[in-house]
Image 1 (tube, helix red, strand yellow):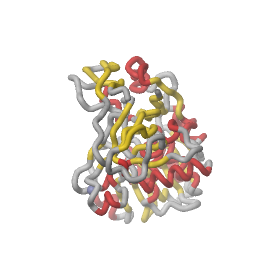
Image 2 (tube, protein in one colour):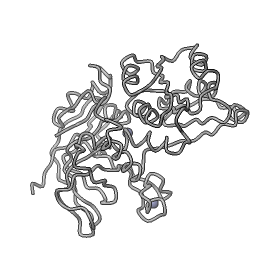
Image 3 (cartoon, rainbow, N blue to C red):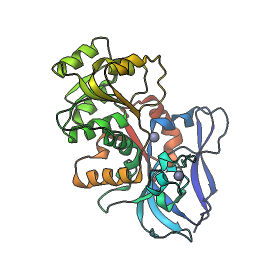
Image 4 (cartoon, rainbow, N blue to C red):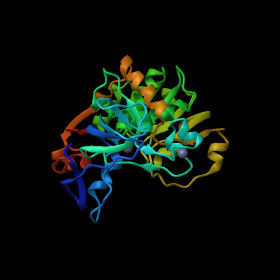
Length: 335
Ligand SMILES: [Zn+2]
Ligand SMILES: [Zn+2]
């Protein structure tokens, strides 16, 4: 095997370069994966804004082919097609034993390095892809679709529920579709018109830009019932004011978008008997369930993938990802 590979590295602000480096050394419980597709996530944007060269490589939505296996690998073999759950836990605790690495209390590692030709990952982090699922689609299982799937699976969402999705980036768009196939009546909120159109195509019944009269409009949509579940995918503070205003008594607010900072009055959740919880990424079980939805045709992850970039071209194209220019909704790196 060729012992070199290409990888994208960040050397400074807006300075990504293709470098040639050694292929990763395999540990006993790991497999070497030839990356075939890697989704680009909003949280990869830091890669464009570093001040000095970094060792860590962005890209955490990878799928590919197994090309070598460590001595302790039990089931995977060379040639298997897999998607990678990017979060590595201790591997020993009860959460890890259940494939819930993202809930490991002993410290988690976000493995990254997806913008590389090859990655070494633990066998337990790999989900075998169904023959009908492409690498491109497979790369979107654990984060783009697994993140909202995991969040929704912890709610009591059922047919007829009023659900509001705030923020229609790729994760919000997936949340719209997943709520729709549960039979919910979905409202989507986003300032960007092309994202609102995409939300309608994913099954939203109403879409709105965030503005002052929004709360009244949404409550009217629910026929004064109030919203059962808000899925906050934007990470913007005003979403929380909106959510607390539109949720019904006993409603649920799920925090999915990172980074909102705001003042919080506990009375707002107490008086409405709200359930509020946060949800990060997904588990191996979530990945299996998302793959089932893909195979059954209930979800089509490629529908809002607007751009695919060759690994070699990523440095020249990354500004499109940062600026959402050229109609970009979701993009994938391919080989
Ligand atoms: Zn991500
Ligand atoms: Zn653990």
